[in-house]
Image 1 (cartoon, rainbow, N blue to C red):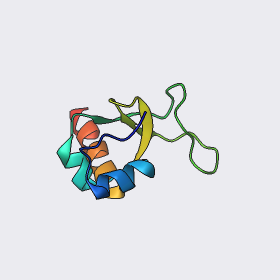
Image 2: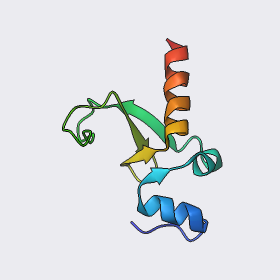
Image 3: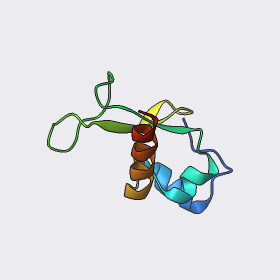
Image 4: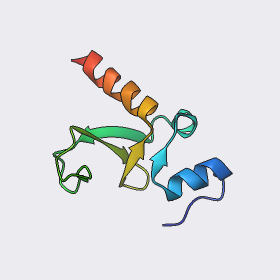
Length: 82
């Protein structure tokens, strides 16, 4: 699947890296979610361990990486719902 033509230069660069910055997240907050690292197909950390939470792009149906600030915000939202 190609990258949509409507993406900014920053978005295109980050999409190629599968990294979602705060700027990109704010453009489409409903598109990106955190899922359990135990989900089938979820990537493991570089050391082979299961990650607690993993970013997921609902539109492309692919696992993604969030910047630290976005990741922390989403984890905090999940923990506040408990």
